[in-house]
Image (cartoon, rainbow, N blue to C red; front, side, top):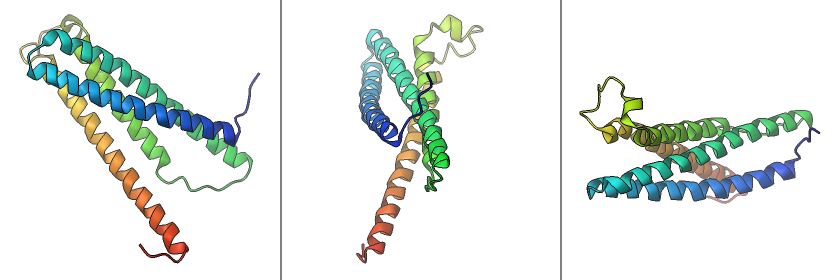
Length: 171
C-alpha cells in the first residue's frame, strides 16, 4: 500500500529529523574532540574507539540527511500536485552540503577504523600514519559545515529583515 504523505506528516518528520540532527551533530563534535584529545595525550587505544563511534554517528547523520533529501522532493511533488508555488531558495543546496559534509566525516572515520592493510595495500602512506590521511576529510567536512551554517544564518537574517520591512518595522 503506497501512502502519500501529507503536509502535516512531512512537517512532523522534519521536526523529528531536525532534533535528531542537532543531537548527532553535538555528539559528533564531542566524539571528534575526544578523538583529538586521545591523540594529543597519546592514548591510541581510546582514539580508535572514538573514531569508530564517530564513524557510526556520521553514518546516522548521513542517513538523516538523505531522509531530508527524499522528503524535500516529496514536498516538491506535493506542492506541484496542489499547484502551490513555494520559494525554496537554497534548501536543496543546504541539504546537499549537509550530505557532503556527513560523507566526508564518514570517510575520515572509516579510514581511521579500517586496518591499514586494507587501506594502504602498498604501504604508500604508512609512514605518515592514518590520522594524517584522515585529517583532510575531517577538515573539509568541518569547512563545509561552517559554510552551510553561515549561509543559513545569512538567509535567516534576510528573511527576518524582509518580514520586518513588510510590517513597517525597521531593523
